[in-house]
Length: 233
Image 1 (cartoon, helix red, strand yellow):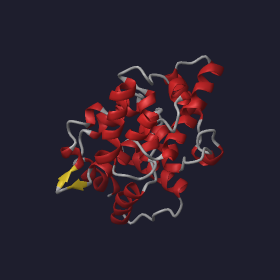
Image 2 (cartoon, helix red, strand yellow):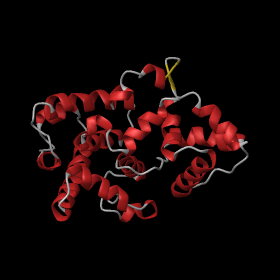
Image 3 (cartoon, one colour):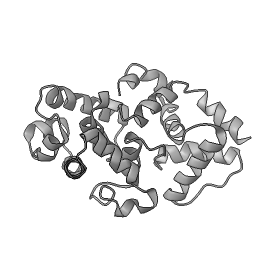
């Protein structure tokens, strides 16, 4: 019964597998770890992802990455959070502090482990633990909650889910239809969704992205509305 219910949702977003595969291969945003970190920090304050975050990350890419001003994590860590040009793109200073903190930690990891910036990001994700997220070098940073932590882990190659309100709402519907209880805390929720994914033949990340992409904006599902943007990010 559970598989049939999950299948009925997943059929609405057949493209989700490719998008998730790119995420797990750390290839979002043209493989730029700099842009993935900026994306995660902008997303953390809860504004509309496609209408607000994506255009701003794109603007940052054009004005800073493509021009060579900020190309590496070291450049990102050294950036001035009060820089007027950065503020013009994104006014929230807390987001820039999150960006700089994560970049600084990954630069340190690069140096200590002699890794590329992509390898450093993947190394962090692989060694991060959900149950200990608040003690994690990234998880304990000011401005990083469990959703940002999980989002970063997914982009670093970990098959998991974010316990955000949209994911909980849609997964809650599925669990209700299958007469399965909804966990009361975030970690138990994540672990349950990971189990449901295994039992139904999907990846946890695919269930997570499905919940976001079946949402409608102006009567059109996001997977249709943003069909041109999604393959690029």
